[in-house]
Length: 279
Image 1 (cartoon, rainbow, N blue to C red):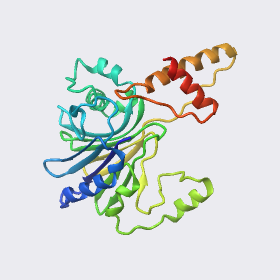
Image 2: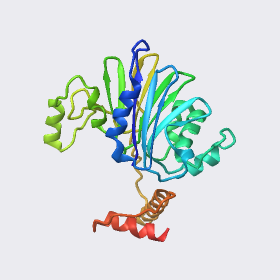
Image 3: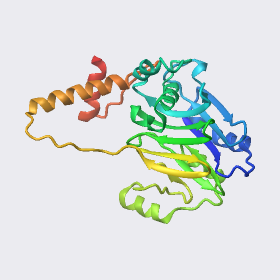
């Protein structure tokens, strides 16, 4: 778990105190990352990022964030890209990697595949990229929403953070959203982009937010697709499930720190722990 946050000016004419704002965000997210802290402000003061790091892959200082790429991109990232080794191998001929970090592979994938790069990422993640060449801001949340990402647009300024409380200092008032509260009392969670805080929204799973030329656009980059296959014998399904489980657990064990499991006593956690012990 890491903490990411940032401020992006939709209106270039706005004067923003990035230092104070990012400092407040960083402090509110400090518990999410005890291993490092960093802040970056774009040279023309169009955007600023801050990050709290919990080190899992590439424990060196070279992998600290915000991370600057050779292609004038900057990223803050929370989560893990499980197929980062495969991406490094595929993209090494066109990107000079300076770290062993999975975060850098996101920048390499963005350079190689453009705005379609999300389809090449396998993992749990929430990240933000500033592209200085195109003056473009991109914010992405993983396919099923394992990692959180909240944002608010206040007076022409976009604020984002890993936790809603990182945005509270910038709201005109702190009020409950009655529609979101109704959803929560009915379903025990909010079913849409609204949150319990008025003015704060969550970026939905499988979505990306782009700011370019002062315009904010949100689009869905992934959705569940079910292909019905009739007539396959049970043994075929069992074999495929076994292969998928072993592959998934193996990918999740990647890291430069010890990895453990929590066992609740259910079939799912027990099976995951058994497979992890045998990988």
